[in-house]
Image (cartoon, rainbow, N blue to C red):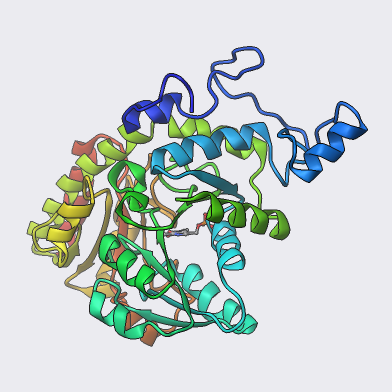
Length: 397
Ligand code: LCS
């Protein structure tokens, strides 16, 4: 923790957190230590570092000063003890599973997860003897009922991709701990600016850094942040073993992106609030799910555990998928692309894109209807975004 961010609020930590300025020459921005390996002072020094008796860098898969700068600021933002930076959000997911699970274990998870995250647990971990139950984790009793003696992890996305389902972190942490399991929260949609799961009892937080944390749609990356040192060590050991580490250049860009995390998240949220109101009131729209609307099914919980509703909106048009296709093909400012949380607005169709790895039945039972459109509202001028959307919606009435 730098002396400039100690005990400070998130907007200050995002800018001054981690080992800044760089201790060697006082560089205000963390240098890119683009080196795969680090020289030992002598044979005894190398042996001591390998034994863990002396701190210092050995090899970039194990640790690197630029990557470490990102890990430190991320841990400070989420209020964790430590973190590991991974090559992608899916790298974080696989590292987590290798660190936590073994043959015979059981996982309870949100039914509406990012498609490949669900696929990883359901189809890949099952080959190693791990079983799983996917359900509506906003229903705490249903989660309790799904717990088995061998349940090791409750894994939730809240808000969930792409349904915006919100689950009660505090209640589920209690359910997990009573069962001798851990609660892991994918905090990608909220970012630490709007939600800090570790302070609500979660054990580990996962991020696709690709999204808000980096924020400029130019890096793919992941993070795992642990509440305590035990889990921090296990995650690092798994990362070393699986080889899912981040690259120093990637880490440098993410540290740079984090400096504007707060203003980006808040600016996008302001635009999203306006956009959700427009969609909610427009006759071409069948329904809207946005945590900032009173109609959101878990609105009270949103107000309790989040500092704001964020900038992701799910909606469906009255004309279903056919009308949705017209919207996607005619809207001008939002880019028709997967991913989310960048400075630019991104719009996509989950059933045929991000959640195509789930079958139709699985999608419907998770609330991912064929006509659902997911809109990640960016930080463009809000008037332009609203004007653009209104023009296309008016065409569809
Ligand atoms: N968790 C969530 C909530 C995600 O949305 C994603 C990616 C991941 C984990 C995996 O992260 P990655 O490996 O891509 O960095 N979500 C995407 C999406 O909704 N569209 O494209 C990617």
